[in-house]
Length: 291
Ligand code: SI3
Image (cartoon, rainbow, N blue to C red; front, side, top):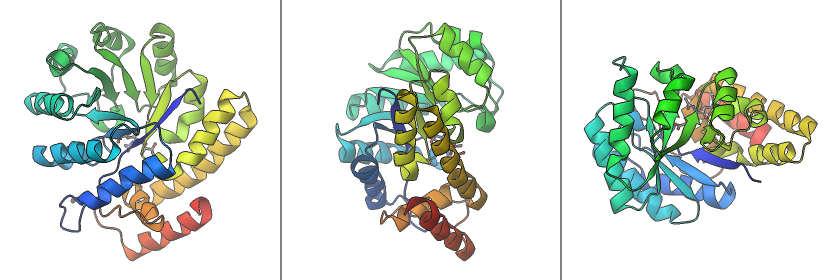
């Protein structure tokens, strides 16, 4: 398999919202030992990162590095609308923990101009010896980067690619065509197959925590030219993803991991805890698609 599959790492929280370190380590191990994942995207949306304090973010980066070691590739998402925090996290993960690749979400909420966005990225990588992957997720941030915006960001040689969580396949094709040497990691799991056909280098997603085997088979079928098999797997995958989305995304993935014996814990408030009905639906999803 030449294309890489990364799980967007979940964080395990206790019922009171504190970090469950043991559970988080179990999620890391499950991804490495059972899912045989190529890498982990740490501190992204799936990690509930944007609801966390700086000290908790640091502790998660620390325990993930400690648990994973060099068993898989690690990407640390350090972006925040507090640029100083982003720089502090970048410095911490690279210089204290030895992460080689960082990522940063586009700065959101304040409608930053493109020159401000470019300044943000250049500042984050300026003082660290690491490469950076832009995290573009317009549906959650409201920030859409154009092809020319990407071209300006990519002028910085330390900015090596994008985690592209977007259903705009025209822009994806234009990016692939214009930047053949930049890494494009696709972030919308339910649309993996069309993204593979447009030449992405791999994928990062939340559902790979529980559905990596299908995604790996799909990538292998695609690389072998067996489009029928790849599409069949995408259909099965999307039955699973629809069921997960209908029941509550992160809560359900955590419940599915619990069915696999992994202490994935709770989501963080204000995300709500799973109701008994959600738990029952999650068991059914597990039995139907993942057992
Ligand atoms: O943790 C991350 O930052 C991600 O990789 C997010 C990833 O793009 C996921 N998006 C969100 C909003 O969680 C997808 O993997 C998504 O959960 C999946 O495609 C189901 O819709």
